[in-house]
Image (cartoon, rainbow, N blue to C red; front, side, top):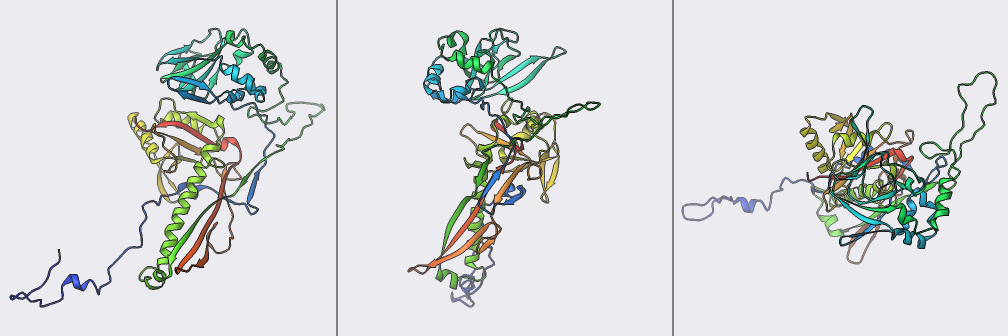
Length: 460
């Protein structure tokens, strides 16, 4: 409320506070920006110089046998197989160049719907069908040594079970398959397969194929000798490399900042307008850079994680069991990256079990941890319309064969490492232009450096 001092006759006797403000300088902040986040990914990634603009990842030779993931399309209550993706099944890999036969094969599958808790197949029953999971989650359960059931795996959309039934006539199910959620499957029985005799030769070749010597990771073996005595002939060997290694090219994020020369000349007290405009624009570029490192389809972590390193949650929300399975798939998991809402959902699951995760210090700041691994919040991990998201676990650094960030420093007019600000021109409207550029990418050196927990539900 503004006070005005007046005399008894209504005439001002001193300067009003409202008028005085016209001559006084207010105490003010620099411009604030709500969109600035902690950007943990940019902070914890080891940055490697890609001076040539391209980074090549050389690996040992790996034998590709198909990803095992099949895609589907939905039309009302009917679900159809994207026929070309059937070639991702190991037994059908040889049919990748025969789309007509894959289309005919897709037409032989029949749709089945199950409710949560339904048994799809029983342990020990005759295995005479290939089962594709179009929607939902299932668990494979095997009788334990001492009577209790053991959950072997949780499978979800795009996964399959029973591809061995295509080549083994007398196979039986080694486990029970149970629906954890409402589930839609597409099944191919041996009788339906008999309608396509053209497949016989392909499946026979698959069953009798000459399997190259490979490790459990699919890499070409290095033959060694051990445990021998005397003077036997030592095994000769060599390490084979991929002939076409993957190359990562630096991506680009840019913006043109425009500032009128009148603003830059006259309104620089107490804060420099050009400096503040640059600072906020750089923050926006760094936010976009982190978003790209996670979501870009070419090099983003979510899209480039190995399919064998992707696992669904067992029940929906992220539980301690889910995170234990996620971090157990790699040596030296260093960081867990999750949306803040996913971290909150994990906290609720821990509280329900009477578990209270410890905190740890990362980059000088206290953060929540699990098994001593920092859980870093990152709002760039997308949340779907179904209120699900993903959680990333990773190992970092070249020496650890982990995940690394790629950049190029030493740019002309470099403002920050890997980010340049170049003055462009002043146009006829007296507006100055500055070009801001940053070059970046990310590389996963070996597949197990990065794992993703998928279909993490936030609403329960």
